Structures are given as structure tokens and as C-alpha cells.
Image (cartoon, rainbow, N blue to C red; front, side, top):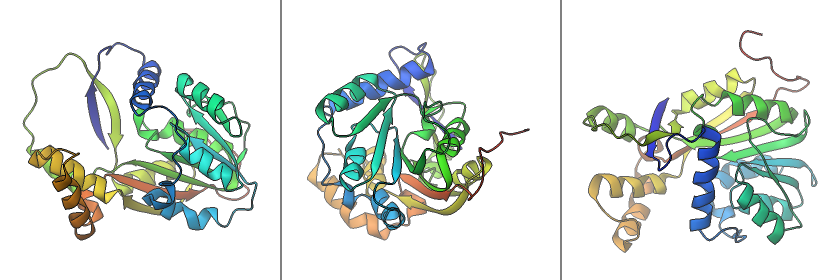
Length: 270
């Protein structure tokens, strides 16, 4: 597992406060909740999870852990599932509740939710578990608690791909910057599988995803091409299918299952 850091205006903020402030600002810069659902069926995450979701009955209870702008919560709610979107950003959740009263949005911390044990048939979380410096286990154990025996877990985190491994070993040490703070963990496929297994889940598959985003980032960071240039976008479309996911993919997704007839998992040493 590799740590990424970020410059922060208020590096002394408690981690939970920092995460809430940071993502509230990101969502505000993106214009707040818009209900942009048309892109979801084209997302790599959806292509992985769709066959599993199709096996669930209509009305199945589903959790969106770290729902952000709420698009995924809305999408699955309109597909007939009973979905709860949870996010640490109270401001964003208030906006979602006001704009989309037909859906369920709750503010809270995915490490300590208010949901009862075995509440959900499925739980998905995109790019959230990695943002706590103590590691993924608090998120994994809480997911295990709220998922029903036999229920599904879908998790994506940043992939520590070969590009990062090579560039990380070649990078020169940076001069000390006083306002750097922890931002996220980056994991290999094996490390993500191990984290879920430690938390009690049975891992079904682990796949690299978001190759085009990884190519875009490489073109920008290694070659200085701006994200918005047509050249950059065109090259990413051409190159992404040709490069192995282990080398360039931006994220990794895992599909796991809580073993049937299994109660809450005992923590390490218990």
C-alpha cells in the first residue's frame, strides 16, 4: 500500500473534518447535485456490478457508501432498488435531500454508520475507503456489519499500478512542504483482496478499471499535456485499449460476498 499526500490550507484539521471540507468543496466546484444519470451505464464500475445486481430482487436494500453527488443512489433507486446514499458532507446531503426527496440520503461516516446489523443486500463504494490514514479496515468491518449474510460488496480504490511503482522509485525526494497531509492509500489488486479477506469477506473478483483515466493522468503528469486538450483526449481513447490495466489503470474494483449464515466478523485478535 502506498500513501499519497495533498497540500492543505488547514493541515491541522482533524481527519474527518478535513475529508468533509475537502469533498464538500469538490462537489461545489462541480456545481452540486445535478442528477446526471445517463453516464452510469457506461462506467466501468457499472459493467462489473450489473450482472450481480441483476440477480437481486426488485426492492432489494442497497447502500451507496460515500454517495457524493448522489447519481448512483438515484440511478439504482429508479431501477427499483431501496437505496440509502450516505456521505460525510452534510452540506451535499442537505442539497440532495432538498432536490431529490424521492430518494434516501443520510449524512454520516462510513466507518461508523447508524444502520442496524445486516441491513443491506448489497453495498457499493467508489473511491472512499482509501481516504482514512488508519487504513481500510474500519470501513471494511462496518461494511461487513451492515451487509446481510450472503450479501454483496463492491469497492473501488486507486490502483498502485506499475506506472506508479516505476515512477515512485525514480522520483527525486521533494523539499519539505509544511502543509502536506495524508490524502489516500493506493493499493495493488492483491492488497485490496487481502484487506477484504481480513475483514471477513469472500473475494469473488478484483479487476483494474478506468484505464482511460489512467492514460489521461499519465499524459498530463509525465508529458505535460493538459486534460482539456483534444489531443490529450484523443490519445487517451487510442492508447487505453492497447495498454495493460496493471500498467496504467487508475482504479481497481473488487467484488466480494459476506459468507452466508455468518454474523458480524470478529476484529483482529478477538
